[in-house]
Image 1 (cartoon, rainbow, N blue to C red):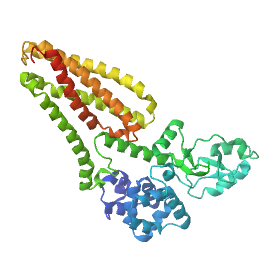
Image 2: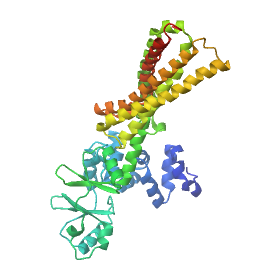
Image 3: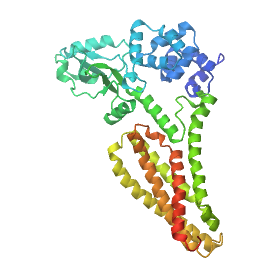
Image 4: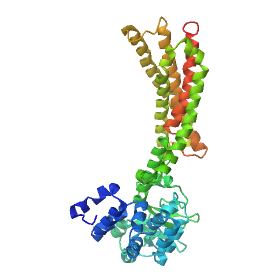
Length: 439
């Protein structure tokens, strides 16, 4: 991008995904300092790491030192062990100490998301003293400038006070007279999904992170949680589609890795679908006697798979955002049983009409027992759609109870289960209703 014009640079952010690595590095160098800083801090840790890796040692050091400890930790986690050592050498002693402490936490824990730099106050100081103290702190890269956290001598959290409340309070008042004592906080080992729910439920811009003794370790800000929500949503969508979570942008995943991520699930689903062929073979005699039954197999089992996929998607999403808990399983069971039977009855009615209309319109001749065939289609759809809805609704709860991610109850997985059972239900209904006539 050595010939990049100012107009091109203005749209660099929108062009970013399509640029090569060298074009990204050149584009960052050509941007004015303020714009380059703004762009760099909106990138993912993987993109930041890639950019820093393409810069000279002095340039890379500048960008590493501009990162707050939590972002620096994310960048270090995104590079190879050898590159990590090089980048760690670019950090000043205090930042390296803070970053190393953050790296001790798992990536998906609150401790791994927090920024250890935050405004802090003592409870006994006056508002005027607090304002002067905070004014001196603002030149430092703090996690938030909306709240100050009131700590005792052991760094235990006593309360929180907003900057707006500080400015509005009389100067002689003590901080412990105006602070909010019941501050909402999270444990340093809380899962990132739980932290995201705390933000969503309480409409917060920052949340303090405490250890088991109640000592404050850092602050998680809403911009960190936006990244978490996007990451979790992406992972869940990929799993619901029957793909192992990629963990990286689509184009950044190598061809071999992509085959590995997709091939495992496809192989498992293929093996599951082999049971469908087994079920078809079991009912071979019935199919030979009434070939017309085979015409409705795709219609019936796909309806069950679709209903199960619908239910699984709704329940997985509700579990992910905290709308449902494990204790709600029976309420969901009762709701999905009713929904499945009602939807099955409606689809069965449409299938019933289809047989009747095709028979009378001359599109297809189903024979003298077409009415019984129509009833078989109706009853089968009630059973298959009801079963699919029940499986799709309950499987996420079962996986959550066993400690697995409910998103792994993907739509293809549910559809595979329903395909096999759907054949059993369909031909079972056919034997009961058509025995002595077509069978």
